[in-house]
Length: 453
Image (cartoon, rainbow, N blue to C red):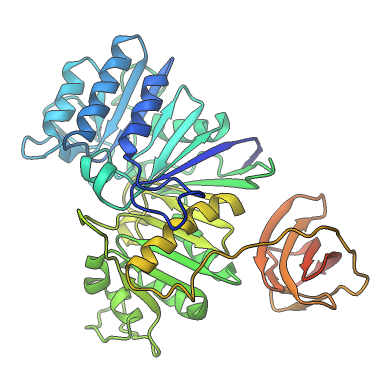
């Protein structure tokens, strides 16, 4: 399923970025969230995995109650654990319920509403839909740690069609479009179905397309595998939790392209990270031992004061595709929990995330000589070379332009941009006729390729 749409995207990071003139770093993320809640005119639909800690959680709860009091419809889907009096989120969620805001939990609780169509796993989402027009998503929980201390990202997308996809997921859990949840129709985890649009073609000069997927029904794990396999020049990963050895094995094939910064707990404890470091771990039937030799380019996070977790779940592919959201690289994250994953195809958005990645990479001990932003110089004139040759090598088109090739762009026969890659190789997604634009050291050249394998 796909739609042609237009979008505007904002990206914010709770920790520093490499070049503050390019990306927004060291942001108190709750201030962004509160701004959009305060700007809501009709509806706020919000998912909460956790919400606690002063002052960030206080400001978000107060903003939600202000919205309710000025006539905005506020609906909340939440993880059932925070309905327990032993949870640090309990006082905050009861404030919302006492203010008359309906809260649906993903399993049986003593407060609010609850749903019994659940497998008992986590409702791990952390997204908001404002007025069915704006989506806020990313890795950050609505806690003071999530908003101000841990390394996190949030992405704000102004787009009705993307917002409606998230709203569809929300209302599948909610059980309908009403003001209160429908306990007879609510669905969580495997009770849900793959029923939302996934691909949104933008082509607005900044963003080429956006893809949205929800766990556990929509194949989020396959999206990770697919983008690893198609990467042609670089893979940059900032990850909080990484236990899928199948992803470890996919990355091993792309070892020379891959740079990883992992939360220190993941770096020292999770089997894939230990193997990527070149170390042996005990083997089991789920995840066979496979230490890398030589080790991969992986570092433990080294966040400056006040410490905290590297809580990101993002990857950047070829400095063009950004994968982010709530999905950790774990079996539960992809196959059990309620989660969301968003992929943004944009050089500009990828550069924002790359600025954050470089800061974490260098902070963790990485060498700036191997990972600095690439400066692309604009040509003063365009030269169309008649010497462009394109040959097929496996599932890749290899471009030879008579001059060094800086990057390659792949277009459909109808002229829609499909992918970009640095260097002279680009993967072909399927059979068919494609247009190729090669940016050379001096000028550019174009050609066609017919892929029939």
